[in-house]
Amino acid sequence: VHPKSYMKFKDKLRVLTSRSRCGSIVKAMKRIEISARGWLNYFGIADMKS
Image (tube, rainbow, N blue to C red):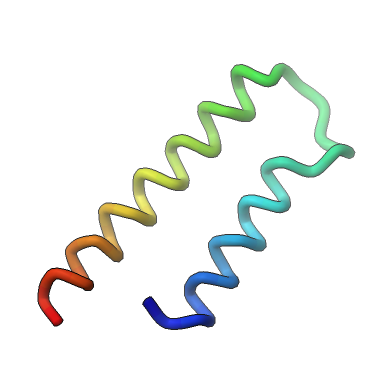
């Protein structure tokens, strides 16, 4: 995985887990799960081809 892609994902997680975001922990975990699953599915396939 390219470092730029990894950093972009980490930045997105920082936004999703920001202390300034209000809402329930359950909703935050669901958003993180959706983002992580999509990222892992995309880059998991990319790593398999190389």
